[in-house]
Length: 220
Image (tube, rainbow, N blue to C red):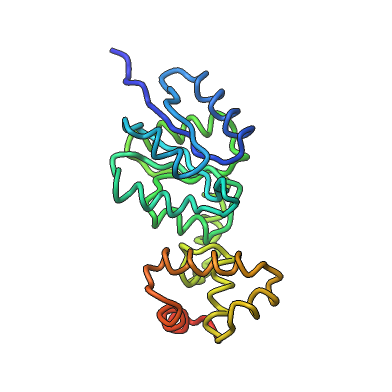
């Protein structure tokens, strides 16, 4: 009796990488790509029938040019389609991203430099209900354990570094124009970052964001 086919959806905003990954997966026995997407809207269109695994990049650019968080998409999937296993595959190897992705509900974390056989093993593992870290990510985690280094708590790990930077300046009492000048960003980009922060942290307004940020140690 043959094992059931593992159905996979690939989410990545870089078409060359996405198409290359789709080609690799379609060449593997027992794995079939049932859809691909570059953002949330595309993902919603291709998961009308649940795949077993979604390969998720962490940083996605939308058609409007704004950045979309794969961590937020993972959290959304965890709440709406918990039967789907999310396997992150990204360029980000920092500990904050790994921790945030796993807290959001991802069952695995790979770097895009992973070898094809490592990708295959990870897909089969998360489809089987296991949790897995890529070799490089696991090596970093083990080094911290062996070295006995205490983990540094990063406030609001669901935020990007830039969003956290903007929130810190908001907590210091700076207005959008000043934040724009300090970070060399357009006023629209600053407004977008603040809107993303409010949405991700479920805060109703700027005043609530200031309070939450200062309680978390930002704005000092």
